[in-house]
Structure formats: structure tokens, C-alpha cells
Length: 284
Image (cartoon, rainbow, N blue to C red; front, side):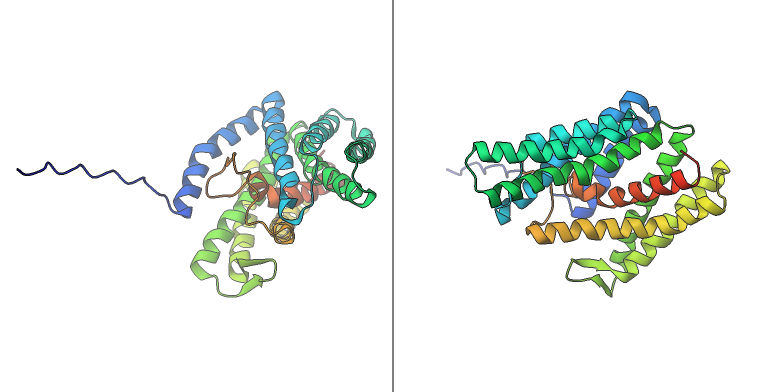
């Protein structure tokens, strides 16, 4: 009597890192752009939501080094700072940072920590709103200005254009390590392609809108450098904390891209750079 062969179990479909990246871009990218275009409370909600997740990721970075932070306090401080910045209360931000530090110190003492441990926890707790909350607030300020959509798109294009072109440039032609001690996979060739691509796409955006002038051309030429440096800064942070990527184990929002911090590392420095340039040029 012959036995009936058991049906083969279907193997789970596994995607390569590139396929995961592409799927994330094509599914979440349009949603982000739609909320950016909508502006107002829609963009505010998107910015705050991503910033809170990034703050939680930042608070979690030190787990391998036994450097703890208060995630809830960091997240609350991020929301407060973004709200203050977006509502014209920039003068309140230093006080909010000091308050965050003092509350973190107090909470550490309540849990009977030593002075050294309390100070470390307070510094880690206040670092998240300073590193993440401030530039996020600046992005909202830019979006809320006259013609804010085009200027925010410029910030995003400088960031995303540089990142995307650097990724493909590195995969195709990458040979020379850019900063092997910080990020072994980044190459000089990838950075050069990223620079050219980011500047080119940004220049095209401004040219099509009739805003490519001497001052804005300088923003286009220097912006990709800020994106590359911002990426290296976050890579240095991850290396210092001995983590591969920043995403939380229970919340992988951008499959193939790491965490929110991994996707916004370049944006943080570009946001600061563009905001200062926009102020100097009288755009905002």
C-alpha cells in the first residue's frame, strides 16, 4: 500500500535588502509626500510621530553600553520642543531642555542612582530632544512659511537625492573607503555620485520653479555635503553605542532601511543647514 506523498510546505518569501528598500520607498514614500504637500496639522502629525519614534530609538541606543535614558521623558520633551518651535516659541526651547535635564536628574535620584549614573542618564535623556526635536521643529517652521512647500521639498530632495544616488553609486562603482572606522560600507565613489545626484535633482527642482539664483545655488552646492556628513555622524553614534541599526525590535517601520534615525540621519544636518541659509537669504 503506497502512502500519499505529503504536500511540500511553501517556503516563506524572503526579500533581498534592495527589494525591501524599494518596497518601502514605493509604499511609504507617496504617503510621506502627500502629508508634506498637505502641510498644516497633517505634516505636523507626521513630523511629531516620526520624531517620537526616533527619540525612543535614541534612548535605546545605549543599551549595549549600559547607558540608559528615560524614553518617555525624551519623547515628551521632543513633542514639547517641536510644538514650541512650530508655534513661534523658540525662546522657550532652552528652558525646556534644562527642565528635561533636571527632571531626569530628579527621577534618577528617586531611584537611588549614584550622581555619576544620574548625570549620564540625564545627558542621554536630553540628547534626544536636542538632536531630534530641534531640527524637526525647524522643518515645520520652513513648511509653514510662504512658499514653504518648495523650500521643504528642497530640503528633502537634497537629503533623499544624495542618499539614493550615493547608495547606487557605491553599489556600482564603490572601491575606496570613505571613512572605514566610522562606516566601512561607505565609499568615496558613492559619496561623489551622491553629491552630484543630490545637487543635480535639487537644482532641477529650483530651476523648474524659477528659484535657482546665486544664493539658492550655494544651498544646492553645499547641501549634499551636509547630507553626507549627517549620515556619517549617525554612523559614528551607532558605532559608539555598538549597534548595527537604530530600529526598535518591536517596531521596524522602514524594512531594509533600519530605524527612523537611520532614515533621518542626513536630514537632521541638512535641516539645520538649510534653515540657517533660508534665514540669511530672507526666504523665511
